[in-house]
Length: 211
Ligand code: ADP
Ligand code: MG
Image (tube, rainbow, N blue to C red):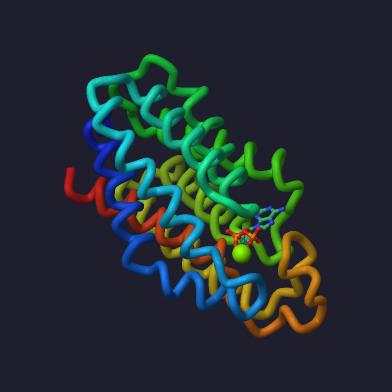
């Protein structure tokens, strides 16, 4: 299996479409434990990304992902911009000059993205953030693929792991980010960032399934 630069573009377009579609829902989740801007933040960022994609459509995957990262860092207000921006930038750095990615390269890019999130946000699993969806997703993808699943099946399991991780944030106490200001009152609400992370994983699966 190879993920081409064109498919990477379609993945970003799919994320932008999902963010647009789920904008109000993401903002509603953030209203409960944050400042009601997560959907608006990501929609602003990915809308700007969409305007920049035509300029990099014939470029390598590293350049495409780097453009996404720098755009998110500079246009998304709030914690999620620098975090997702760093994730895309770290992924871009391990696929420089590549015009297609095999399974191992995709997993490597996702691992680099996760490391970037840890480095930038200093959060670990269990702190009620996007990490709680992304970390189990990346781990499941890597393990399932290593155990012999096809990449699509491994990715389906990974998306299910991001969903489970997202749902698990409901019972968690937030100790990072804005939701941590609420202390015990953060318990009982699903984390907005874990929700947008699950949505991005679904977008990747959709593009890979389409082939
Ligand atoms: P802000 O909290 O600045 O308003 P957003 O609302 O756009 O930014 O994003 C909030 C999301 O960011 C949270 O739901 C959480 O998943 C994520 N987040 C916040 N701080 C961290 C962190 N230190 N590490 C990882 N994710 C974080
Ligand atoms: Mg917010």
